[in-house]
Each structure stands twice: as structure tokens, then as C-alpha cells.
Image (cartoon, rainbow, N blue to C red; front, side, top):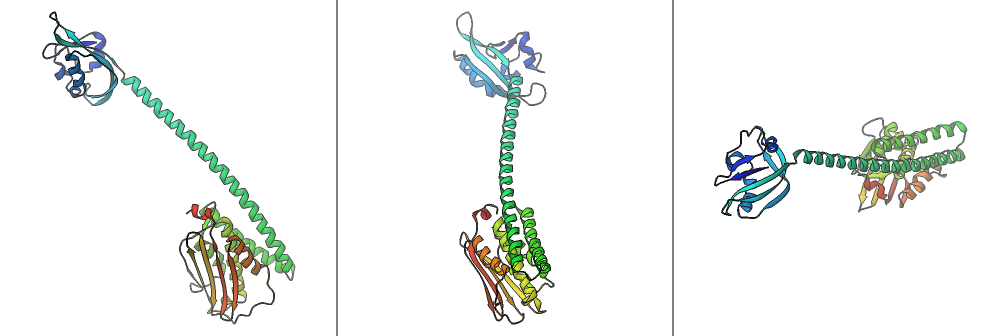
Length: 327
């Protein structure tokens, strides 16, 4: 404890008070305002209250001090009480004080550690939740992929003229499916962008920069829609290479797509410069996949038009909500 006395509030203190002074020693007999100049404005309200006859009590008051030659954040719990002379007049202030700087630092460290631990727990819970979602999505993706592979194999074998032709066709279709899966794995768990899908599907059939002209905005498709569209483009490009525009040196293909409103999607494939086109008398699995499967995936309509100047494939439908969430 210490007390300040007289008009200048000269300081007097006991030995237990000395550690709080730091390098402000010797301090006995020095005016309060001069000795504690760095915190004088902070404690002045309490000084005035005590000199007016009203004691004060405050806990863990933050004070920035320079008692050791540098600024430091300190905390004090103290009371100021008026001191009277023999005549009963207030002539000084008694200060009973405890420095709580160490305790406050420990409390702050504990609070920070608690906040860090809480954040770590929340992050771990979020990570575990993401792993669960990822596992569910991968399981769903695997089931759908296996179902698509099974359908490719069974339908191709049903319409093939020989086992060697069937093996070649199945291999090409599964490779197209694998490329689409690579896109989905590389870009997002649940979405892939249309231009990347189209470029990957036509890459084996592009022997010059003028063969394909692609135009469209950035549109993301859900995993199932991406796989379906990739296989459809693969079938279109394969047929164009065998019978259509890509079978002639001057043939070319224009590919375009666009969004229609919030959920609508449009895709267009147009061949030109190839041999005259005649509608086949028999539709194979490739055509059925291109039209029926894709139209179901996009909940819309897909149609192949065999025009004399070139094949046109048009798709109009809706985007899955999952694709929008990944953009």
C-alpha cells in the first residue's frame, strides 16, 4: 500500500509496494503527478473522487506504463480512500493495491488457448463432415459409373457385328468415360466445365486447328450430366470421323452452348463440309445414348438431325443445382 499526502500528494509506501515501482525509485516524497505522469490522466478521476470524500474500488484496470524505460501493458486492482488530518479535513489518499498483470496475461493466454482449441474442434468436425460427404459422393459416383459401364458393354454387344468390333467400340467408349472422370477429379468432386468436357472428348479427332470451333460461356455441369455429355460428344465425334464432316479434309464442326435463364442449358453440334448425309436405316446404341440418355440427364430434349449438309445435334434442358453450387 501507499498514501499520498498534502497539496502536492507526496508519495509514501511500504516495502511490499516497491516491486510495482520498477525503476521509479527512490519514490518516497515525490509528487504523485510527477512520479506517475504516464498514468496520471487515467487515474485522475479516482483521485478527484477520493479527495471529494468518496472512496473508489476498481478491478484489473489496464494501464500502459513506462516504469522500466519501455511501454508495457499492466493491470491493477486497487482502492483509493480519503485520508483526514487532525482537524477532519481531507489531506491525502490511501491506496491499497495489487498488481494483476501476470494473472491477466495468464487469463488472456488461457482464453486464446481455449479459442484455439474450440476452433480446432470446429475445423475437425467440419473436416469429418466433408469427408462423410465426399465418401457419399464417391460411392454414388462409383455406382453410377459402374451402371454406365455395364450399360455400355451390354448395349454395344447387343448391336455389334463381331466381338472384335464390340471390343474396339467398348474400349473407345470407356476411354471417353475415363477422360470425363479425370476432368471431374481434377476440377471438382461434383462439377466440370463444358469447354473442358468438349475439348477432352474431341481431342483424339482433331487433326488441325480449324476442325472444331467452340463457343460458349463458362457453364458447370454436375457429375452425371458431365459424364453423359462427354459420352454424347464422343459418339458424335466418332461418327463424324467415320461417316461425317471429319471424314473429309475440309469438314468442320461448330460446337456452341449457352445458359437459358437461371437453370436452362442449350448445347448445339453442327457439322459441315463433309460428304452428303443420309439418315441411317438403323439406330445403334450410340444414337440412343446421345438422344435418350442425355435428354433424361438434362430433363429436356436431345435430338440428332441428319440433314444433307451435315449432322446437327441439339440439346435443351436444365442444369442440376449441384453444378451451380460448385461455381
